[in-house]
Image 1 (tube, rainbow, N blue to C red):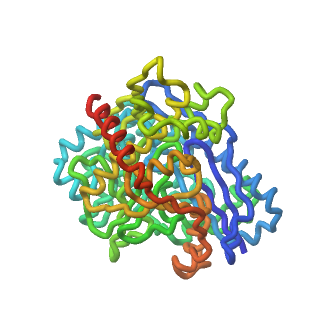
Image 2 (cartoon, one colour):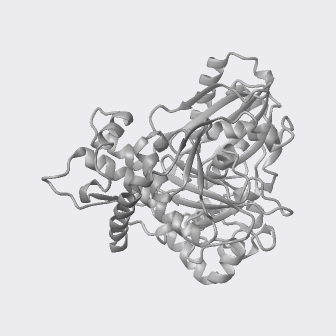
Image 3 (cartoon, rainbow, N blue to C red):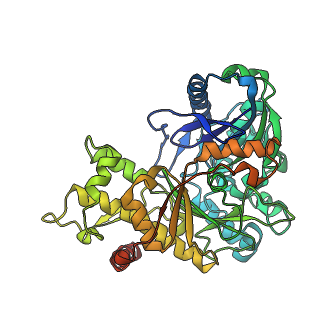
Length: 492
């Protein structure tokens, strides 16, 4: 018996096939090999064609099936993880009306700010636990204001994972967790937010039917089965945004537990059982995958848009023929603090923790007689770490105390420089696990389909690969470097 998971990101789509009994990943693949294109017609804009996600999902799955060579009739569940906060709109025939406005697009910041003021900050935060900001509801309002002919054709509004599930099953649905990430959910009333719908002039009928996060949400249609090479009728039994799903994949489900990622963007995600919010809305609170009306489970999310994308930019534009391991090797011997060179890694759209400002990336303190390529490579990694540290200080103010950070053994967490700097700067032990978003989605689909009877059963085979402890001998050096970096942040 097998379970299948997809992780639909903005860079690639990953698929993983697991043996349900052992939890062993039999095959995994991602497509495309190069990052998926992002359409940026104007500064601050970021769009992708949903058809590109579907095409690369097909390609990744084909790779997996070729590796595994199994009878696809033995795949008993499908789970979907997806890039959060995106907007997909379709007409009555299910046709996509325009490219998706994705998570890092910042065009609707002012729309969100105006709605925040109009609805009232305290009323907004106490009901939504966030300001409307640059999230899905504000993106939809932008379409309403700027593309009225397209807006009038909208039948349903979806998140990226809702779109993928709809392509698979023919059923357009969403979840409470998804609605909360779009800022459509009222946590006081535990229902779709009439406050937001009224403020933005959104017809309730445009919001899909709500389905449980863990449940059979639909069955693979004949058409989709033919396109994917799977058996029609296979249950689609889980969907969640990438960050709640990443936390799930690390078995982060209970209050006080922390998960982190450092891919294109960077995230620290803590679970709470108390309704809390940052008065300045620099970190965000959403319904976690296991949140219910009876049992509160909220995900407190700190997102830094410019993390791994900075390292990727340096690789493409400055590192020459170096691979990431070689870049890490060059960075490693450079002294902590990079002899005065600092980088603010904020070059990938408006940063929530900076009050929705798009400040751009800043490189400061270059001395032509001292600094060279290796300094820049290390300063980039330290800048990413210090942006995490800055955000964690905000999280601590609302009660999240990350003594242990769990992460998948991937992306920036493959760098010894990054791991040491993050553990020592935050004082938190880092635990790295052999898992990722697509594997987590597969396990979650097993729960939704009833293959696993409990979270404990689903995670019984989760393997810890490494533990990284703070280095007390370097704590002062990292603290001093952080203060220099923070002074640069205050100056922008």
